[in-house]
Amino acid sequence: MKIKATEIVDTYAEAFKMYGSRVIITAATKEWAMAAAQSITGFATSVIGCKCEAGIEAEIAAEDSPDLRPGVSVLIFAMDAESLGKRLMERIGQCVMTCPTTACYNGLSEGTPVIVGGQLRYFGDGHQISKVIGGNKFWRIPVMDGEFLIDDIFNVQESVGGGNILILGKDQKSALKAASAATKAMRLLPDVILPFPNGVVRSGSKVGSKYKSLIASTNHAYCPTLRGKVKNSELDEGINSVLEIVIDGLSLKAVEEAMRVGTQAAAKPGIKKISAGNYGGNLGQYHIQLHQLLASKDWSGEI
Amino acid sequence: MALKLRLHTQPDVPLEADCISPDRLQSLSDSDISALTLFHGNRQVRLGDFFDCSGKFDGEVIVEGDLGNIKHIGSAMSLGKLTIEGDVGVHTGASMRGGEIIIEGNANDWLAPEMLGGRVIVKGNAGHMVGSGYRGSTVGMQGGEIIVHGNVKNETGHVIRRGLIVVGGNSGDFTGVNMLAGTIIVLGEMGIRTGAGMKRGSIICQHKADMLPTFSRSCVYQPAFLRHYFKYLKSIGFSISDSLLTEPFERWCGDSVELNRGEILLYTGK
Image (cartoon, rainbow over all chains, first blue to last red; front, side, top):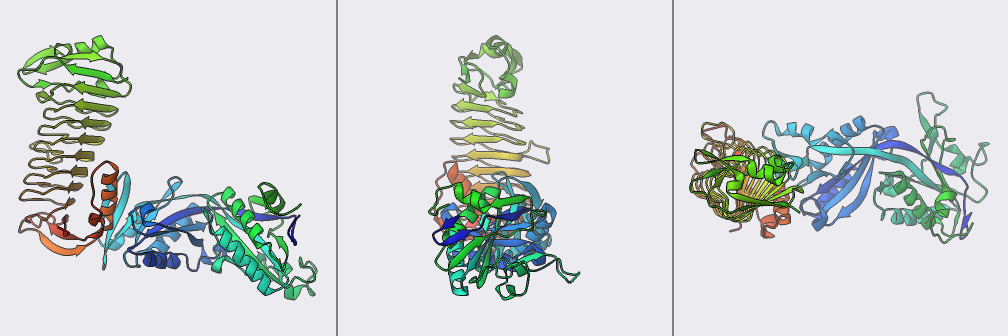
């Protein structure tokens, strides 16, 4: 299968069951809401080292936000509901509550409830106040610029993490350009985030390592510098740079759609192949076949 | 089609009609409904002596006529909708647990005392003791919502512990007296001695008010939680000025003769 001159490898992305939550942050201005959103999604690229994966989903116009102020929606993912609850408490407590003028709301109407505001309220040292408005319970925690308002409960739901595409370019410039085009297109979609820096990761990993203490190590099969050294390189002659885009989403459908849109956008001049990362199919619950994705909707390429 | 009750004979003395509620009427035939007993003063009478019955219960009961002398309508109701097309007497919705009462006219005193849940909407005015506890009772309203589009008289939300009371017009004296918790919003002006003896809870007013000396002014700020209330009030038909969302409120803490954990928030934009 090809899109223009780019070959789409007949393979699949191996994605995992995760738990996800949507956090809505509002503030007096869009800038302050974004400051809190950037802070809460910091150091959250991979569960391997960061305990969770997070990213900014979208900006929210004031008229559409829960308290009629400018907002940002953030998605946070972890491997189970309990640890996600802990991450929410830590990150909202340290990154949102600390940010001037912010308020923080649960953005999922369904799912498993975890207590977040109900735990953070203790920061109020007994001066916190609860309010039930329209069936939702909030906590008002006094802070130095007024009050921090937060939902008592946040919902978490089964989600999908680790959807991905690999962009195999003739050089770094082409790969970067294609990756940027892909992330730009994918960011327009709801229910997904791209947790790595600017949505792109260069240090893709494989499971395990020659060093026993490491659970993951560099994906040597896709390292161009190792093509002449390792036996199982996946890179052909002329492929000199590989970039990966990892997608986490609130549903399999959302992840698939992001992969489809990203693949189409990344098929640019200088991109020899687009592939996907997997672990032989033994780890992830979801196998997202690239060819099936692209055949499932109208697209501009050829089979 | 809703079940309709129409008052055909005006009672000489108050009629105690706690049987007029969706809970009691939902499974009865017209003849059973007419045979329900109620008290006319100290005499036991049949509901059919005062009301005509028509239609079939589909979740809603509509009561027509001047009901100003009818007491306890909707008492302890837990489900359905009760629409009163006119004025209604005292103790309407007393101890109600769920469902919705809509009063197209005015409500007399003791509207929804000791209410536990559900919603009461009054399109006109209401009397004294809205959502209050009965005399001698330590707890008043414990949940639900009372929405009065017009004015209310004294002691609104007396010993309220939970829930929301909204007054679109003015409230009388002693608004939120001895309140334990919960929220009272007054979009008009409040009388004197607001929040006297309050332990916790919030009284929010769109106008300035005379404060008791046992309340202390804390600050002027913009509470984010109020935006949720105003957004909600807008959604149920109140006219909420955009300036309420942008202008700050003055926060008073009290009552210091009690726990000093209550608050009165007064809009500073006027």
